[in-house]
Image (cartoon, rainbow, N blue to C red; front, side, top):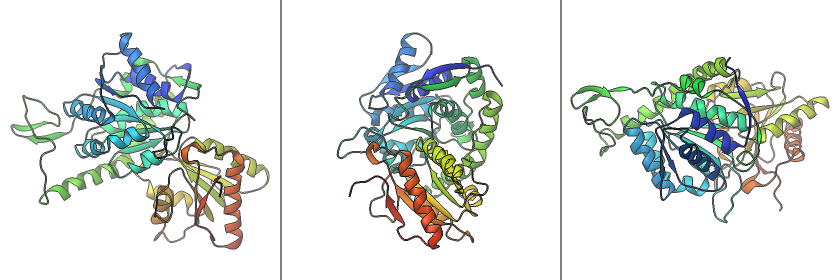
Length: 404
């Protein structure tokens, strides 16, 4: 394990500091609350000569992702950051980045989508992009933000993967809250990240690296109609499947370097749990606190923190949750007109033909930054215990903390 330095950083600063250490070739920047601190801090690193990065101040988030796509296609390492309406504005380009298999890294500081205008946290922005082909990592605290912003490059650039990566952190809850963050040296980070690798493809003049190079011309993103489009989408399907195997490998290497181990899923008190909550992001720290409190009262409660939402770790979830009697899903996003939130629907789906399955209850919470204190988490657990006593779920879709 390498020597580390303890810094006081908020989530945005942790992201910026990690990206500074990676020293990418291009950063495309456009400000939006609560992401702005990331590109502000990075611009200071550029001004102070601490990085060699080409810092491009663009006129919109659509342009920011377009800039990253052009840079990454030419072989550069490219980074940007955004939130909420900014992510929505670059929607078209998200799909292009993933379809072109460009390992761009982007920090998404989760914020509610308008309207009404709201600058606080929920997951409606990144959940809306869940089918765009990006890997999605969700962070509980600023330490995880820092570590994910280092690991993301190795994950996205893995030769079996070659996909863009979103590092998601809760707006204001993490982005503007200072915490202790253990940081590696610049040298250790750059050694871990290494040089960007390229897959080999058949270019116009023979085998070539998959990047735009005048000496070895190839075509990227051409018109692709019904004769080949479907097959090219299957390449993305395969890449996501391979990411499920590649990510634990990168996590293991990073654990040897930093002493901090990560997995696709982080179970807590699940060995004998009869009821459990599953969710994403900073709220899972509150859930852990409530689980400890319930355990002291004799309740066999547990929790499952999902660090990775895309690719969806279906087999691992089935194995870890199959013996739990009732599972509550914490959805910090609404799926209007659907039976439940995004995480709930996917969890229900994977258990449809899994044999033994738990009762599953959905709790939509925290929309627009609504506070979710321990008493609301306890309320959710009380609902799970009531379903356990009844042996059935009465209300599958519930709303925590809403005023009726």
